[in-house]
Image (cartoon, rainbow, N blue to C red; front, side):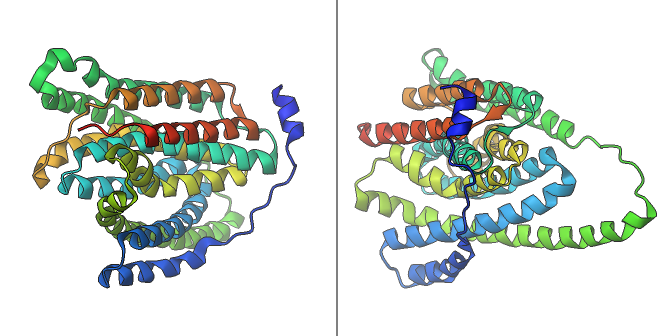
Length: 365
C-alpha cells in the first residue's frame, strides 16, 4: 500500500472530545489513599491518572509558549519539563536500591516516547489531518543524534568482558561525553534569532501575548511541581504493586515505571500531532528521548553516589537489542519528512509486541 493510498484510506476527520482535567481530582484522592495506607495498586493507579491530567496541563501551556518560541525551543522546553518526573522517579528508585529497574525504565522511556508516544501521535494525527509533514532537516539531525545516543548505551556492554570491574568508570567517562554533546546541542538550540522590530500597531498584541505567556509559564511550573509529587508517590507504590501482580523487575521498569514517567511525552506528542504540529510533536518525542540519554542518564550516573547508590550503563542484551531496533525503525519511517496514520499504528503495534516479549521474559537473578 502506498503512502497516498494510506492517506485516502483514513477515515477523514478524527475528533477527540474527552477533557481529562477532571482527573486532577485524583491528586488529593491519591494522597488520601496513601495517607490511609490503602492497597499500593490503587495508589499506583490513581497516581497514574493524576499524572496524566497534570501532563495535559503541561502540554497546553507548552503549546501556548511554543507559538512564540517556535517548534525547536518549544519542543526543548516540553522535553525538559516532561523528563523531570522521569528523573525524579529514577532517583527515588535508586534510593530504594532498584538500580536494574532504573536502567529498565531508561529503556522503557525510549520505547514509550518513540514507539507509543510518537506512534499514537502519528496515528491519531493522521486520522484527523491526513498525511502530516515535518522538517526533514530537523528529523535527520535528531535521528542521527538518536543513533549516537543508542550506541552510547551499547558501548559499555560491548566492552564489559574486557573492562571487568571498570564498568562504573567507563560509564562515567561516556557520561561526560554525553553531557558535552548536550551542552553543544543546547547552545545551538538557544542561538539567538534575529527578529524584525514590531510595527506600532502590533505592540498591543505583543503585550497581550506576553500576559498569556506569563499565565502559561505559571501553569507550567505548577504542573511540573505536581508531577514531581505524584512521581514520588508512584515510585513508592511501584515495588509492592509489582509483587502483588507477580511482575518481574525488568517488566516493571520498562512498562510500569517508564509508562508512568512518560505520560507527559505521550500526551504532548499526541496533542501536537492532533493539532497538525508535527514538527513540535517530533521535537517533544524524539527530542525527549535524546535529552533523556544526553542529560538525564549522566545526571543519574553522577548523582547516584550522593544518595548512597551506584549506577552504570551496563544494559542487558535484550534492552540493547530493543534500543537499537527502535532507533533504526524511527530513522526509516521519518526520513521522508512525512507521516501517516498507518505508520503510527505500526509503531504502536511494535511497542505492544515488545511489551508482551518483556512480560514473558524470565526474571534473572
